[in-house]
Length: 349
Image (cartoon, rainbow, N blue to C red):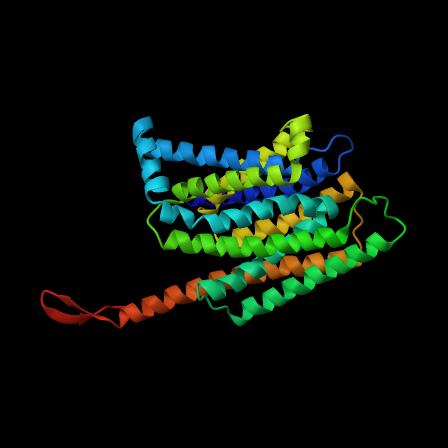
């Protein structure tokens, strides 16, 4: 059993690392290829549709593979309880915005810089958790968040200086736009994630039903984005203009990779997740050197190391806090009197 648990952790770590690093690298690759550029707004819609269909299929399995029962269940969950469904409009809007902005960020920032900077979502999530869920942070966690912010700032200073230097040969990329896009992604990701968690905890619907509701809004809002930004291009060239096998691979990775990670995370702890994020930053940096001629200098290495250290500090602090709470609960339990056969006794420690 211990061997199986260890194997499961290693497999989970591998899945998390590969998915996280591959999304950044592959998205950067398809966004910087010469030739006809695919419509990123349509890619967001396709990914949302795939996630919606996948979650609906899981609900179908949970209802005994009975189409009528599944349809009735979804009608009741989505339409009859429309007030509950409408709660998902806010996170759906933010996730749709975030998914579109990721393409903007990756198009204007190297994959390694994006991957490191995107870890600021830990900071935004922590801040929104404190405001919306009343969660308090330990001094160690606050220190790790400050270290995270400082590390990202150093990486961005390095990127800004590199863009100004004579070695830059891509005039179509704007690091300032990329930075603003990734910062907006971090804010929307943090708020939407905490808001979604609050909804999950405040209702009885399963996470798959919630994702169906989220997917319905996400697909509709994504289509609105296509109409707003690319309606003329779609009318002339079609919805799937510029799609290549690699673009489809990126879309499938974004759609199914996120769901796969959500399942895998259930079998891991904070240390494994933090290690996965750290390794994905390292792998993205190393592969960017070979794939995109990315230059790693001392400033970037210092900032990236600070971010990786901050991720580990924050996650281990969370695990330590959980362990302390559990131990305190056990110690309190030992002091609680209980009754056995009508006699008042104490729990033996």
